Image (cartoon, rainbow, N blue to C red; front, side, top):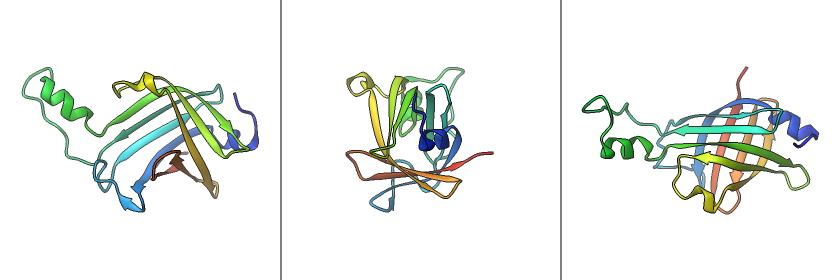
Length: 138
């Protein structure tokens, strides 16, 4: 578990404010996606992002394979442990489980972080042009 000042700032629950690629809205997420990311002082974390779309309907009591696929399209959910590398300004998410098929081939996500005041943090995944802005809840 990380113990520096930045690591302590991560602890808590954050809501997604926006997600962009090259400053533009990501079409697979829509204009107003919702999400939450939680960092616990024990070193565990969880993240979920729901694309901006109307509620999906099911034809019966259980989803068909097509309905289940549509529900997961663009949805992100995973949990695991995390570590803050303050020297590099990177938070590392080590996934224990994920809804993404094949996630075990790349279980670690590195995100460059930038705190903006006391209420926001920007995460930029290493290796792509995405940017996720999170706002502290509570």
